[in-house]
Amino acid sequence: MARATEAAHPRTWVPPLVVFGLLLAVWQAIALHDHFLLPTISAVWGQLVHHPSTFLVNGGDTLAEAVPGVAISYCVALLLAVAMNQSRLVTRAILPLAVTLNVSPLIAIAPALVIALGFGRAPRVVMTALITFFPALINSLAGLRSADPKALEVFETLSASRWETLWRLQLPSSLPYLFAAARVVVPLSVIGAAISEMVAPGVRSGLGFWIDQWSVSGQLDLAWAGIVTLATFGLLLTAIVVLAEDRVLRWRGFR
Amino acid sequence: MSLPLNTPGASAPGLSAAVNDEGYIVLSNVTKKFPTMTWPALDHVDLAIQKGSFFTVIGPSGAGKSTLLRALAGLVQPDSGQVSVFGEPPSQASRSKHLGWVPQSPALLPWRTVLENVRLPLQLNRRADCDARDPEEILGRLGLGHAQDLLPAQLSGGMRQRVAIARAFAFTPKLLLMDEPFGALDEMTREHVAHLLLELWQAERPTVVFVTHSVTEAVVLSDWVAVMGMGKLMPALAIGLARPRPEGIEDTAEFHELARELRGQLRKAFGGTGN
Image 1 (cartoon, chains in turn yellow, blue):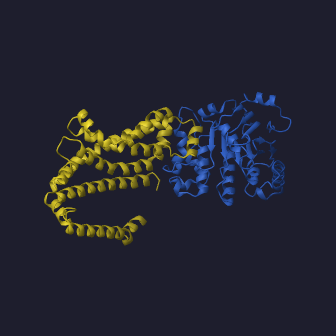
Image 2 (cartoon, rainbow over the protein chains, first blue to last red):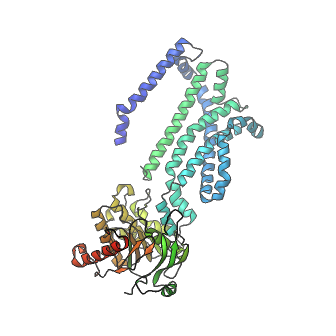
């Protein structure tokens, strides 16, 4: 109740609206001054309304790479984090590799992925998975390690098995961290998929691919309409994660 | 009641014999040193506690009280000496679910209701057969019957600590290890919860090793109180107050005499006021 009232109160929604409005005004001023730098807002809006299917279909293609990519990386990261939490040996074996992966310019391996996996969607999905992997792994690991040490002692004095400790204490304790990870990697997956469309040659689809094409050919209104579409998708996905987080964490007594 | 073996005259040979005795929990010449501490947490500690008694260790912070408790729980491995819980090493006692652990903070699982938290020990390590109590009944006896469907976040500190006690009693462990369980509670709540614990203990009679800073708590609850400082355990003081001990026993002359004696021991050991 209190939260709903808070959300409806003007002090919650007026400030972001003002900032957003100011930004649009500055944008429009620049666009009117030099339309080679930025398209006018009306031009971008016009593209969105006149060719909705272009943006929705290609945006859907991007999502079809982003969602499986992040789902794969999230699951693998969680499984690896569980293994690392169980065994120091596994941690020592995996962590340096994960850190190396994180600091590598992953974009640069796109051509290699295309050679290995063909011109289809597969290299883009893999690229998205690689880009989102590290934040998912580190947050999962931090979550598993966040279990109350006093509660761990209670489990230990009862000779609880590793599985019981994982299932009944460590995994439930890590829920807030797992959602924090999702908040980072789910929107990141849309960016990752769009970038991989730009750098992985092959299928002529996906908003990332088209934004690149439109930018190069000077069709800025189309390019910006594509960016707006992807940003909207990212926001919607984030909203889904935040809503799920709120419900689950309340249900589990964290809030 | 026979004397604990760390009373004057108890000799080390007597203790090593008691290590195999199912009627006692025993620490025999136990030493534990942590690298970060200048004195040992446990310094050649000898102790035997008879089954069914309520034994309290009192002393200042850093005296080694918690380490003693953790050694009994198998959470700490001594550098030397022997620990035995009714004739078994602590690891075996833990596997058989003979140990109830009540830490300083209640350590409840925030996503489980009060009742589910009390049920937790029954769901873990199921191979060990324990004589499970009805969790609802235990909660009722601790005055938490109305709260069993609430989450820990909805409870006061005193209620949470009572849930932790109910959790420890739910699977009828033979040995209850309680590490300053009322340390975070205010004075009024402390007394109330201590008396609830006393009633429950009186009915079930598990062996209890209890660690506290409070002289009042030690005298109200215990059969024996031993002062501990810098890793050394002093001879235990027998608390001869009749049981059951009702609320208000703190106001009797007998109680004051024992509390005075215990404060005297603490003063002697530390040269302080014993508060």
